[in-house]
Length: 276
Image (cartoon, rainbow, N blue to C red; front, top):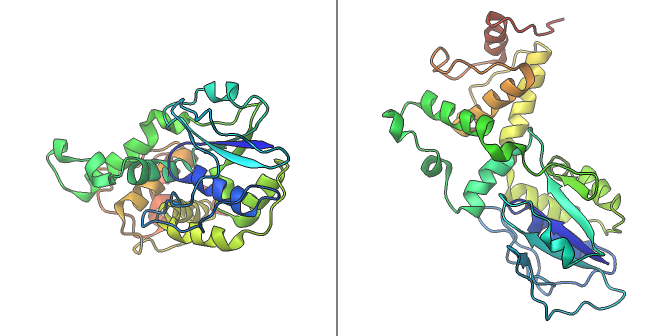
C-alpha cells in the first residue's frame, strides 16, 4: 500500500514520513536514523521513495508488491492542487491540516524552515519608522489574523486529515495514524525528540491556551515571564479568536502583567467573561 503524505511547509510531512517509514508495519525502512536540525527539521533521513516535488515525479521508481511505502507530496504551502493523485490513483492520502488555533505554528515554521528566514526580517516594522515593541506585537498579530494562508489546508471529505493539533500530543497522534489503518510500533522516543526540537514553535500556542483558560475562569495568572514578542502576539491572536476583540495596541502598549488586566480590558469593550 502507498500512503501519500500531503503537507504544508514546516517539517510536518517529513516527520510523519519518518514515523511511518521507521515504525509502520511492513513499511520499507530507510537506512539512516532520524535526527533533527537546529530549526527542528528532520530532512536528513533518507527517503525510501523519491519525493513528489512541485508536480515532478521520478517515473523510474518501482514499488515492490506486498510492501508499504510513504511518499512525500510537496506542492508548497500555497498550492493544494491534487494533480499527484493521477500518479498514485490507488494510494491512501494523508493530508496534514491545521486549524485557526495551530496556524501560529505553521506561520512561524513557514518563515523559519521553508523560507530559511526569521520573523524580524520578514515582518519588518521599519516602514512604521519605529522600533517600539508594541508596534512589532501589532505587526505580528496582524500577520496572524490577516494572512490568507490561515484559511488554507482544511480537511475535506475525501482524504484522511491529520491535524497538526493532533501532532502535539503523542497519544492523539498515535490514535490518528492508526485510525488511517496503519499499524505502528511505539514511536514515543522520536516523538519526544521532535517535540523538543520544535518546542519554540509549540510553546506560544501552549501559553496562549493557558492564558485564555485563566481569563475564562477568572484565574489570576502572572504574565511577566512571557517576554517574547511573538508569544505575546499569539496570545493577542487567541484573544481575538475567542472573544472577537482586537487588543488596542496603543492603549495597551505595555504587555499585560497578569490575566486580570485582560479581563478588565475585555470588560471595558463590553465582552462578558464568566467570572463565577
